[in-house]
Amino acid sequence: MDNLSEKNQENIKKSPEDQTIDSILRPTNWDDYVGQDKIKRNLKIILSAAKERSESCDHLLFYGQAGLGKTTLAYLVSKELDCNLKVTSGPALEKMGDLAAVLSNLEKNEVLFIDEAHRLNRSIEEVLYPAMETRKLHLVIGKGPAARTVSLDLPPFTLIAATTRANLLSGPLRSRFGASFKLDYYDIKDIEAIIRRSSAILKMGANNEAVSMIARASRFTPRVANRILRRVRDYAQVYGAKIVDVDVARKTLDLLEIDSLGLEAQDRRLLEIIIKKFNGGPVGVNSLAAALNEDRGNVEDIFEPYLMSIGLLVRTPGGRMVTKRAYEHLGLKAPEGALL
Image (cartoon, rainbow, N blue to C red; front, side):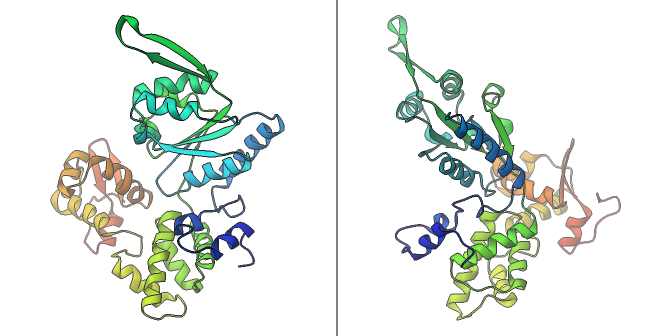
């Protein structure tokens, strides 16, 4: 535990009632944040320059798949700027009055973090435009002929938006961010480092083979790695294992129905449906979602990105198709002409 930050060592001493596991495992400084090195370097330059000028930081957009560390980056930015972080989400801002209340209560140089920014409705975005550009909040009071517009000055602030669907953000909104960063999937070495760090925080021993097995099943995603690690800890505790080894890790993954590539039952079902019901594809996403009894958004946001990243699924102009590797992974014979 000597290599952990002082802040994290303080967190370990607190009772579970004081903090959730997720907040305990969340990195609290740049050294603890493993991976995304290019983004960290760019952010440090942006933040250092803003601090030297005694100005608020440019507005920032983080996008990428869920669980890659967008929220953690927002916390680290606010900590680096030594200011408060106010957190909300796109679905929570239903009316213009909701956003107006948040903006009007900002203090100088505070950071406002909006998660799931792609779910902001267009009327909310219209309020954000002048707030981001000129620090003006335009409110319409009254209705009909008696309606009037009131403009309020806002203090300097930084908006950080996070989204898994950057393509759903309007062009005018995206253009108002001073910098946009895409978070990519992590490599295995970084995931292993995250697992070792989390294991130390959770006071559980895990050998290198077990760490590697958990990392390979973690979909190259820190949140998934920590989720599996917590379940491994539960298994080890219930069955009296003093250290997490390959046997404990494998039995936990079997219970969770997670295979060696990190595929869960629904991932495998998606591939099997395309193979058995649609002859390997191509199949449209709406038909696939109906066959899975899943929302189309879940298919596009949750299942497809990882399956495509490991080469089991491809998108073609005609629809989704599985690859030869998908057949092999499921233990099925690939037909002639299957995609490589």
